[in-house]
Image 1 (cartoon, rainbow, N blue to C red):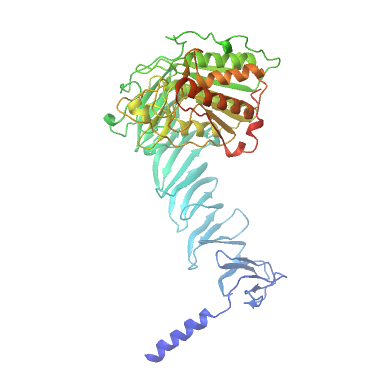
Image 2: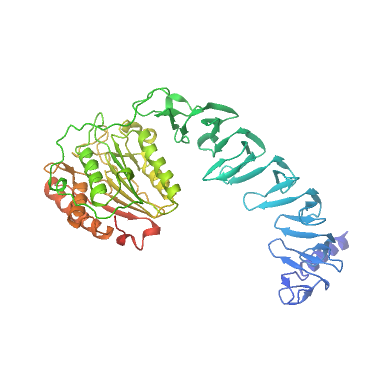
Length: 553
């Protein structure tokens, strides 16, 4: 018994000291160790070594391929047309490319029989393979389990590492285009190996919260999740659910609906918890309760000699909040619009104005930006201007734009996240996006009273970082308030923004513009309001080097 144990130990040591393959010889005839010495036999044909898989492929005199392990031992005989060693399985082809493909594991046991026309390894998750046979596609794992049956014309997949979830989109006759699954007869979804959405919809878009998918049938949108059709296709346009709420449009009307899979009482709809069926009309000019614009910047507006055909402005001016109006926001937005058209040379059709904008209006503005960016394919510039209330989520210290129908006490569900706005704009293919925010996010009104009476101190929100080709110029920083100029009937920030455009006739770069506005606002805020207000410039990484040279026209 003692001799047997000693023998085993000696064998183990001997095995550990065997030369191991690390590469191939310069003439491509044999495998070599780290010192360049030959490991195993000399071959007449092509050889290849995969260091990650610790296995190699060799070719015999009949041009058949086999596999050697890291010690040069032939573990699969030379009987295959083609062999590839992946890190966790071996793919082999019996005949020609596209014929009789199968796999072995590294115990050299056959896993997938030699019946497939193609196998595509996926470089995510614990190991998945896209399978194809006779023109039909499916999905399997490297251990031989079929996750998605081979009965679809098209499959595409992704891996959620956090939830350990494989999502496979399937279609009969479809294709992927413009971030949407379309053009096919039917679309469906598998999660891991379970059918999550039946393959019967004209179009679908990827899931948001609670794995709810947006699905389209006969030209109308609805929602599918939890194994059933949650909302029948009936809407002209929809958004994904976010924090329990989605926005839908039907017959020109926009409304918000609650996530059917969440407890309704925990979700606040814009406008003070309106029911899921309440509708709000959108559009139309707003009426201001404050004096009309009549200052020096509202007269003698310079007129451009050229037309900026590829520049588009989106202007939101929110003034008439039910409990806390923002003085002169409508003046600000309307005069900024005048300068866009007259001084910067934007055609009237390129200017999109939203007065007292609802949540649905903001969604509409962002969607139109997307359409323009898609149509102009990187040859458009967007100017986004907002005057109105910003508001913080005091739990996360994150910033939101407050729609006119929003509720500050439920800002996370009725406000439009600044981070979401930046993300949406950054995803667009644009020359540049210039964002002007005459708002603060401290929870204070322009008059320096707290918007939420229960909150006695201002909140310093996180600074959201823009991405893509975006520059953000905002009226105040941190926990400061964005003030107004009573004698000018404008917000302090917007007044000096317009003043510099007037003085330079719009021929000014962003470096000069932001320096002038920042300097004047800082000085005048202390003189007029006895308060600090410091405009802030935040460029994206893509514009970090050259943002100062960008011109508005």
